[in-house]
Length: 256
Image: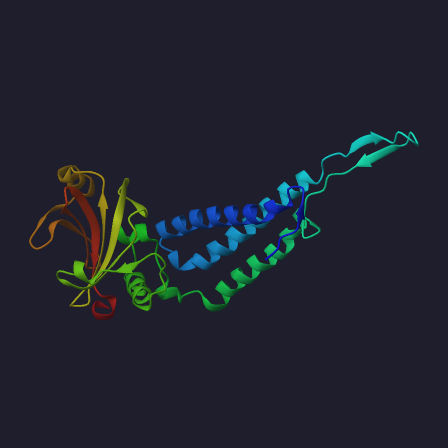
């Protein structure tokens, strides 16, 4: 394909692309942290919108440069010399309009196929799940989304199952804050009996300090744990030299 531009008009493509990618990646990470990775399409839409905005401001600035004044030697008249930055003969800032249109199409496509979940099945933030603050119906809704494969960033890891029938894992760069600590390597598992567990590995190695902070005690079969309410247990244990914390939930469809 042949591109036609004048001045710095060729910058339309890199400005839109780089800005869109950067904003999308940031939003994708934030959505994953708060437990709403399924809204990746929304992040892409806003990323494209940010690219349009960046192109508009840069193009407007470049094309607002005052003209040079030249004197015609023969007529002694003043000639204004404008330097314009165009892409395919169109001032570069005006390319933001079709880019905005694309972003709106992407955003409306998300709203068209991602209807809000029912009130009783709304997804709680991922941090709340790890800290045993998620509703029972929320944990079941999370499991349903994972089974459907509609939570972006999660990957199924059957080899990690142990006593669990299925385990999903978030990418290691994703982090959550648990009890004031940064934690990563978040795993969501479903047990053979239908119960669920959400665990994350912290950066600390002091299990005793975490136990005191969370009020945990030794419980048979659970390591260090305490009941968090309605059959859920907040737990902590050593995992590969670090302290792993999380929550074990009863299956609301059975315990209900």
